[in-house]
Image 1: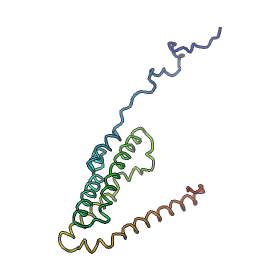
Image 2: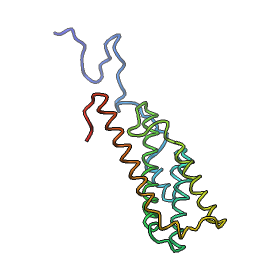
Image 3: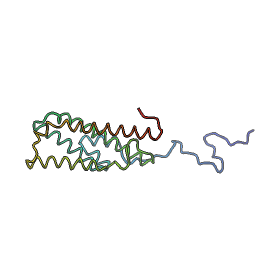
Image 4: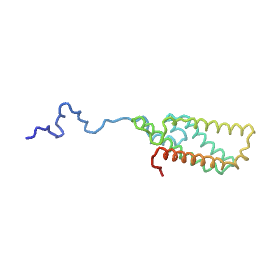
Length: 183
């Protein structure tokens, strides 16, 4: 006969060893946010972000959605008609990813591709200031949105250039750190 302890399920753990886990495995941990509920609440743009505690994002998504509808209805079909579904769907995806990032941080992990300091970055507040400034200038008659509508592709050019610049900077930083470049 062997002097090793018995390994059947009812056997007590060896003295000084770790306690046995309950039959179900690890204990249940209630996560702070539900990604599904956040996405469902985002059927009304911005409400999922409010649920996640991201108030500045909520305002940007709500006013972006309402503004796109308003500008489409006032005769600026292109590009604002395309912005309606984009803002609506991006709002839902952002709420899902935000809740997932909150849960990942809660469990002690690092949220993938989400900078912890950028969850409520100044860019969201700057977006609100920019939208409010455009609407105010238009309401005061100091800005003619019909004339400005011709120049909206400059926004696409600027954002695309910013993405390219950031991509090149990340690639350059990766090469200088003797890491293989990410393709």
